[in-house]
Length: 243
Length: 243
DNA sequence: CCTCATCCTTAACCTTTGTTGGGAACCGCG
DNA sequence: CGCGGTTCCCAACAAAGGTTAAGGATGAGG
Image (cartoon, rainbow over all chains, first blue to last red; front, top):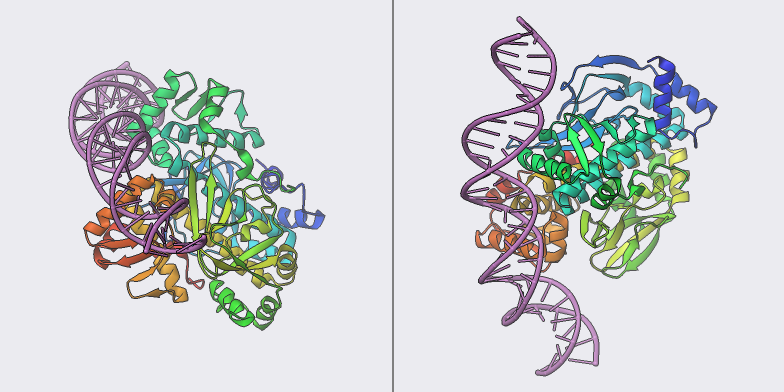
C-alpha cells in the first residue's frame, strides 16, 4: 500500500469530506508516517508506557485491553484499518491500557511532535481529531451498556453488528461473512464472560441459525433475528459529522 | 457562589496550573456563563438532543445514562462540582445519552459558540479541554472493566473509592463520610445489577463493617478491606497532567 | 401529626453464568 | 506426514445474580 492510499484511508476515517480544506489535506499528506509490519499478538504500546508516537492501523486488527490485578482481562475496543487506536496518548501521556495486534498487521507510526505541530497550525484538523477521540468515547459508553445490561447472546450480537457496520465503511465485508479474528477466549474477554460461556453462546446462535462464528470468521445466517438480538442503534457511531 | 469562584472551580478541574498562561485564563474568565438552579431528577440534555451549550456543574450531582429499548438503564458516569459532563457535545452534535441531575443543583451554561470561538483563538485551552474529554474516555474504559470483570461487591467498592477520590480534590469529603446521592436502584443501574442485588451487596458490606451506604451518604468503616475489594489504581484518572 | 410516595429491606425460588476437567479438531512447523 | 500447541467443544456441578412478592422505614407536604 503506497503513501497515497494510506493517506486516503486516514482521510476517510476522519470524515474529511466535511470540514477540511485544501491546506488541511496538504498538511495531513505531509505527515511523516513510518510504516512497520507487525506480527500477531505483539504489544504496540503497554499499560504504563509513555508513547512518543501514535499508531495508525493500515492493515490488520488490534484490540485495546486492561488487565486487572488477579489477571483477568477486559477487551475495550477492536480496531480496524483506518483507526488511530492510541490517538489519546497525544494528551494523556501515560498509557492506562494495552494496545495489541490480533493478526499480522501493517501499522503506520506518526510522532506526537508532528501531530502537535500540525494541530497547532490547523484548527480544522484539531477539531477532526478531537472529534475522533470523542467517537472513541461514545463507543466506550455503548460498551458499558452492552456489558452492564444485555444478556450474553445479545452482547455478542451487538459487537458483531458493530464490527460489521464499521468494516462495511471501508469495504472489508463480503455479503454475510467477514473477519473478526478473536479466539473464543478473546470474545469472552470482550463480553465480560468466561471462554466456556462464550462457547455456549456461540453454539447456541449457531444452533439457532443466526450466526456462525468460527476461527475468526463470522457468517450471518439470519439478519432479522440477529438484529432483534443486538438491538443495535448506530447513532452512537456518529458516522455523519454534519448531523 | 460568585463568578470568580465559579471560574476557580473550572480552572481547578482543568488542571490549569500547568499549561495555561495569563491570556488563556483571561479568556476563560471572559466566558459568558449563565447560572441556573436545577431541580432534582430533571433532564439537562436528553438522548437525541442537539444542544447548543455545554453545562458546568457548579454545585450538586448529575449522572449520564443510556436507556435501551426494553427500558433498562445504565448509568455511565457520575458528575460532581467542576465537571463539564457534556463537553463532548461541542463536536458530537447529537446526544447519544441522557444527562440528569440527581439532587437540586446549580448549573452554569456556556454556549458552544463562545467555547468554539475561545478554542479557535487559544490552542492551550483547546488542549486542556480536549484532555478533559480524554480523561472522560479513560473513566469509561475503567467502567467497562468494572462492569465486565469484577464481582458486584468489588464494583460497588470501586465506584465508591473513585467518587471519594474525585470529591477529595474539591474538598467535599469529611473524614470517612461523603455524599453519593444515588438510590439503591441507581446504584444497581451503575453496577449493572438489579436493585434487589444492589441491596444484598450493600447489606453484605455493612454486615462486614466495610462500608455503610444509606440514603445518599457513604461512611467508610474499614479502609483496608475496602481497598482490597476495590483494587483501585488511580492512574486512569490522569490527575497530574505533567506526567 | 398523619398520609402518601418513595426508598429500603428481606425471603424463596429461578436463571444465567462460572468452574472444573476432559476430549476432539485444527494448524504451523519440523 | 506427524507432532505439539492452541483452539474449540462439551458435560456436570457450583455460585452469582435475577425475579417476584411483600412488609417496613423515611420524609415531604398537607
